[in-house]
Image (cartoon, rainbow, N blue to C red; front, side, top):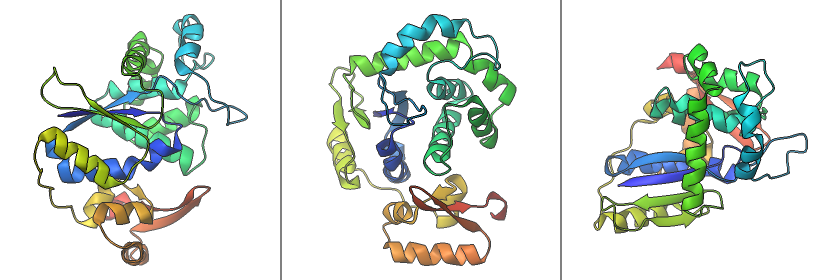
Length: 265
């Protein structure tokens, strides 16, 4: 089966859904694939940081100007963060997902302006993308068309709230199940079970450090959810890793997080 995850990189609830998605993929990833789709209504970071624009309408207004952009020194196109996600996906589906997650970390943990091309370049570099290819793709017609395709899917599926997920089974004639908002993990498992017409067997969870090596930034509560442990036990394990200098604690406006140091695994 396939899950369409409609995401707005500026949406805090989409960010909050990340640990639930990670746990679903760990336990039931063999039963489904996930497709990230940029929503038709993306928030726009600006000086006020509290105004919301319709991405689709603004994109139509500025499409002509966007096509005239030739290089990274040109004026920034509308919703550069969204376009950059599609550019990252041109280097592979996994690269696109890593890029979205890193953008969200930059915004919600480091409080960076992810609509700034310099921040976007930093994000691409940090996850190991081919930077020259990425920058060329950011201003390419290919990335623009991919973005437009996402907007079309969002409109056709009447997605107007974030976050939203649509579950499809293998029968293309069956309608998908759309769920909007943020729910407990059990709700998503229940939908998977219904779609698969049975009770899928959850896979075993990896050791904590293996998970951290693949997902280096996490909050204590997120790890508690993923590993089905009380937060105080997760906190104790992370403090042991901190003493071993394998993790560092970082504080942000949205709370504290643990960052795993890659070179220790």
